[in-house]
Image 1 (cartoon, one colour):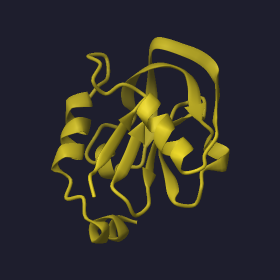
Image 2: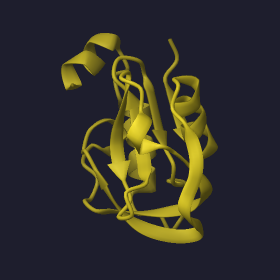
Image 3: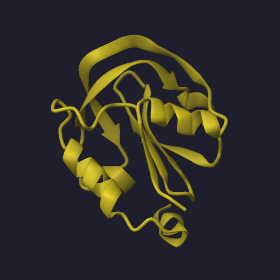
Length: 127
């Protein structure tokens, strides 16, 4: 299969395609940075903690009803889900914008995605 990194709406589409709810964010954050906590795996490997990330959204994937095949990989200080990944498929999503010049380590995050050996056995071994 083809590896997919969903950014913003793409992140929401990954969640929706697997049965998660898309809901209004607690607060509209257009053009604001947040310090995100992440799990240090997948696209977040070797990135700073917390990670400064540019947010520009009014909807989010509801963290409380993630289906079993998806796992949370990053959260904002307000508890909003900022990253998710499929437990066995090569799918990762980020709600924020790593391509923004205001997102710290955005190029590194994208590099992590491009350089990851996306094979099913590797994904299962990471868990």
